[in-house]
Length: 243
Image (tube, rainbow, N blue to C red):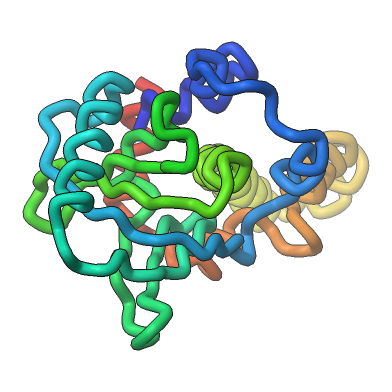
């Protein structure tokens, strides 16, 4: 996971700067920059999955995609159509014929995503399953630009999740600071002192909290909405990235 976050945060020279694709079509420029908090869904065909040894290696992913495609071609079964939904909480796929949930990977269990350079309509990601085993899941898109957009959306979801986590930490730190100020006021009975001597610092803290809000909701509230409140696995994963 750390590798994909680093790739996203360094910009165009990162994850997609290393791929052999042409530049994304201009019509995707605005859509891939929009927040994906509510989730973006791609309608694709599920090629299959295979076990991998490396969590974030592009060559490993390319080899896995080739293996999955070979298995899919040798099978007489029709590829199932699925709805691939991406948001900062993770990736969920549902079988379009039955409506049943097909895959469900939390954001902190996904370590790599790629729009394949050789099979340009294929997008894939590597994730750790509940058995703590690495899997590569591959999907066939209707067009090359859809595969690229799906990979970019997954990358953006990582970036948003990480930024929300950082902001939520800052909010908690600010709230703890406010509580300490209130305790000092209560102990010393110096309400007027806070209003005068600490006016600027109180205003700065309020300004920080306002800056951290997203669409009228704080980062902490958004994390709670996504189901990440007090999620130790997420904290451990992002904390290791910061180390």
